[in-house]
Length: 332
Image (cartoon, rainbow, N blue to C red; front, side):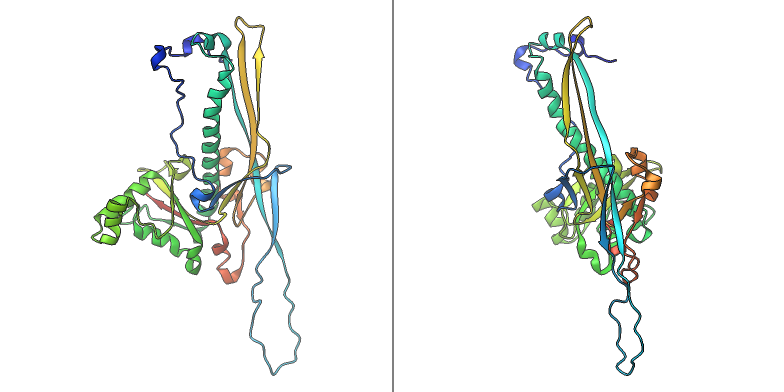
């Protein structure tokens, strides 16, 4: 048991003490409009461990040539269903405990603990959701060779506009469905450097004078999520995702519950705060493998490509890859 005491606080002169709470610096503004709705956060209460949604699969050969000279029997085509499966992940907050004396010593009402902690919890929950969502969609899309390209061994291994075009080309004539880029700041600033070196006013000039980087009229979500870094090779590799609308959906499937309690029977009175919440992750075009990935999966399982099964299979769509969540680009 680790309970904070008065010695855990820095007591400053009153004029310098502003109740500052150290905040997490990672940008969590990646949901909904910020990502052109490619990463969506939806309040949607769901029972059980999985979210299962059926859909009518595309019928191959639905329209064919008709022989006007024949009266032979035609072959029936069957309508079939596929199933997209999302998985519920369960999270806890804390518990966090401090002696009530530790707050009195800094002239703060002990009840203010919940307010101070709430500032951190709101940010931390959002960051955690973003990291998990990106881990899932990166694993699912990255596991499909038709939707992934690795440019880390190219003559220019860092991010360039050419690499973005290569990634978009994986969608063929459906490249227009890519509505947003999600990339690590390393890749983003490499792209900015490359734009400055271009001898075109339309590219370099825009970076300097308008403060934007050319990304083919698609917004960029810059997020230093660990889900966008592969630290296994040397140097590190960075993942950039080109996502379609509703590429990955986070359903807040249960009410968040935060409780506080006063603990007695110790040398000092202690206030403890603890919380729980859960949400479902759904990746466009994929089903969570319930047999292999199981319920309430660990982070490593969520980031394992083989736990996400592609469920779009139309031959006319080159195996259904154009109907997936987007494209996956790897650079240094």
